[in-house]
Length: 243
Length: 248
Image (cartoon, rainbow over all chains, first blue to last red; front, side, top):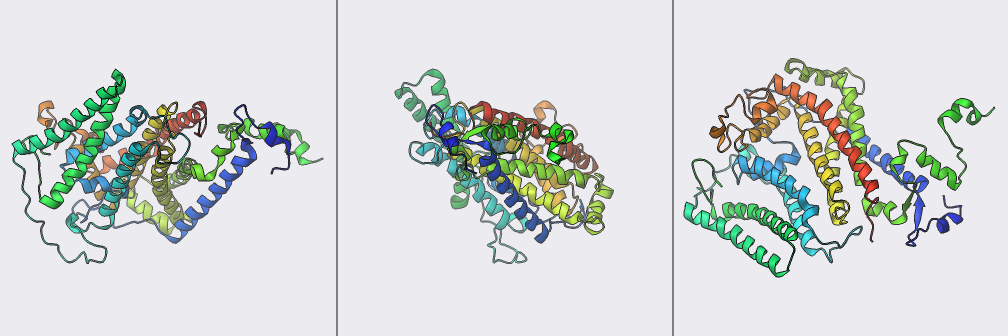
């Protein structure tokens, strides 16, 4: 492929970076990748059949009824939050947060290379969210049995699990104080940092938005911890909505 | 006379295949598919260990889904009384029918997985930073479209797995604040079970024939078209934003 010796010399652009012809250098690699992917997919499809259960029956509920695997993480969040948060607000926030990400990260470092240094905060936050998403999927997909009870893989689903310990709600004033304290304090610290760094107005807004999203993400984890370790169902409960 | 010298051949392939720099360039620039690529690329951008081909493989899965999906459409009718029977018949009477369905199903899972891994790769290499911000946003829309494509396809086999997964999923639509019949504040807008988000999604208050038809049309027409349109923008912007990212 490289029998033409002059190419390498000719292909150095002004920055001295080596350039290759896309054909055949890149196209050949792509061809191999396609070939490998099609072989894997072909074998997978020959050896394993797509699932098909009995015909749909609205009168016979599947237990557990699981969402497709990529949504099982959100279904797992349903244990800890009401559907309007777990099924609507949280996915919307994730999508909005992801879309806004390039506008909230002012750090110009680390383009075009892997590496933790210089982007510690961004990579830590993103990876926490990413790992959290897949951890929830794994729990929902493999460790949840009938009535969404927790079962280890070696446990028999036919053995009925004992009911969860009784859950309590936090008194509303305490709950509101907790939320206000967590978000309020977080935002206050963020705003102060933004001021101290003498950021411009739009940079300040971006900085605060980024931190609100980060606080909300860790808030979701915190609420889950409250339920698991302190058996708290709602932090705030009203007739209209509960958190 | 050699085949490659005929007028027909020459009308299709505009250049010779001798390995010259001119022909290497022409292979890319005179081919509508290959000219997604620039004629030359930085050596670093062509490294497999940089991209792991994740975006390209996601696109490959989309093509596999389109081809197998169109073939499946020949044997499938989106009506509750036929859908499940058609799938069963496909497995037992259509030659390679089961293989076709298996490929469609597994490529769909692979596409969802690959698109998430591609997003991780793009994040870790900082490839969303200026001037590529907008293409990241297009990518997020493609991620959502992929989820929706997979989700709408999930109902089509019309088995217990499909029916109850979509029942669980569509309950979320009913929980939408203001616009869902079980969501907070829905009374304020006069929302009830016949005019809420879930009804819009399912064409009914429960999963049934209308939902099957809706999901079928979304799955086979609207979402693939939307996805193709977004991919067009996505690939074009990769080129316009300076190609695959590399250290500055």
